[in-house]
Image (cartoon, rainbow, N blue to C red; front, side, top):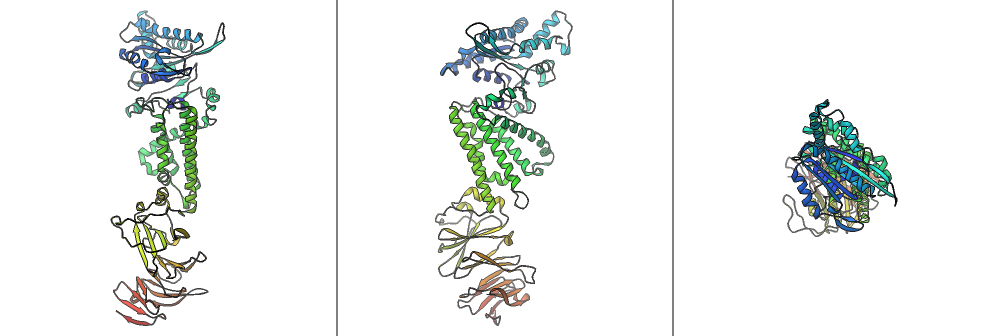
Length: 613
């Protein structure tokens, strides 16, 4: 079981207690250990429990097999059953425990590692109480005899690992796992309290986990194992980082328990990004690692190599996510939602690790989980590169667009060799500006799912877009990439190609004009709001002149020309010249400006008013 091997292991020759209320799964855990533990012999004592449980053991065990000396053998060949059901005499109930441990000692002296399951020691203690009452002995807490603790200790301390006398030299062990059934799941019950003071491993079953159908219902916050340090050399054969992985998992689960109180009071949104990450990783640990379904062919047991491999992948994912969020803070903050969207496919692979079949070789598990761990780290490195360039993505070549566009989007004919790709600030679509052979600019909107692009990177875009980027593609190659922080938040930023396709002007409604040259891949800023100019609504290049363009806004018109640097040549201010659209005549001798008042102004290149309409 993952929760036992990963968090609370027990040694050969150790002692463990499994206390829990009715229906929490004590018997199932005992039977699972009987079926799939690495012991040579199993002694199963049914002490005062229901008769149908022993009947179930007799029915199921003959059908199960285990590997003994490289051969599959029926489990019943290594199992001894001591049956004492609840309808049998009380004296027999007391004797059943001693019968079981004496049988275990017999096999131990033969050099076998024996696992003894006592289900349940509470019924044995009740038999002691009844016999003590009939003998008129002085009762102690809850009517149990005063020597209850001594009797329990004398039973559990018959466990251990020994070197047997005689020849040939032999080593054997007895591991005792006792199920405890406190009334109502009360761990302050005298039997439970006395047992906890003796055993070295405590697997506390939680009624709330059982009610949520989380099995095995071992509560990781109250359980413990004192054998962890003793077992470190054994686990290091599988992975040298086992102790670290185990400690990290316990910390994540403990932090989740602390954060649940905050979440229930003020909601999940009040948590920091690293705390949200901890909650989600803890959920993966709980639901896809610790929780097991004993009725499936992939989850009825979990080999130790598979358990440690899964631990390494989950902890590696958590550490990589925390590291990324710590590195990208402040202005370029990266939250858990960004990582969750970008790593959606990787998280799915992590949650699917449990579907690895349990009968594979150790080498298979090692190869599988090492490869998955490396894939997780590689995915985070890819995401880090993406975030470092702040959306400088390389997209896969797009196929020919479909004949019909998605609902709500406009379709324009594909006629160009040069394409400007812009991400709308609302992240609803890509805006494609295509330059035709005749210099006409065609605009096309596509829903991002309609393009065969790197979907994972697009998911990142949806979360981390804070500035506008312009991509220039020429014959399928990325020609230039510009960051345009001035267009941040712009709902409809404008882009205008010069007819010779050598320059691109970008305009933001906030009043920023920039000219980008493809020749030197440089950017020149014409005008920023605050220098006495007005907000910009449109821009238009003068045909056949690489160094002149007109700018229109709600406060008027102006004309710019590049003479070493960009200079404003003339301007027409006032409501009468408020304009939102511009158009030059083909020969560049006349400029038409249309405004919100419905007036079209026709001007010459030197601001002379030719006409109005």
